[in-house]
Amino acid sequence: MRVVEVERATHDVILPARGVVEGGSMLYPERSCEFRGCPKWRQCVGAPLRPNFSYRVLEAGPAEPCPLGFALRRVKLAPK
Image (cartoon, rainbow, N blue to C red; front, side):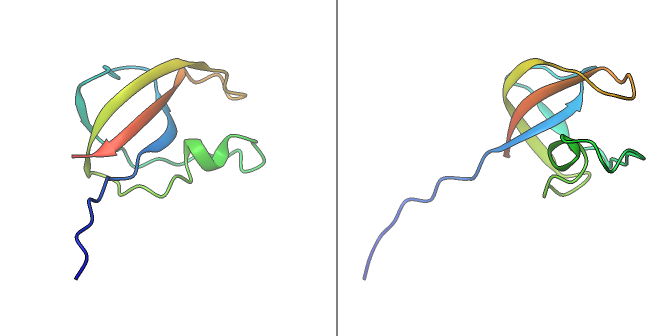
């Protein structure tokens, strides 16, 4: 028998900048974007996270430029 310690995975995503507070928690929003050719689409909209599921904000990073003009920010999330 083996005993292992499991760490929850963290996720680097890009979210709307408004309301992101480091150390806080949030519900991951349902996202959509018309610009499928954007190089950041996977982290911004296509992240493998469950919409309306609670996550803890581990790190709130710098602003990310958006070709459509949205105020976005790079964030590291972990499940609660």
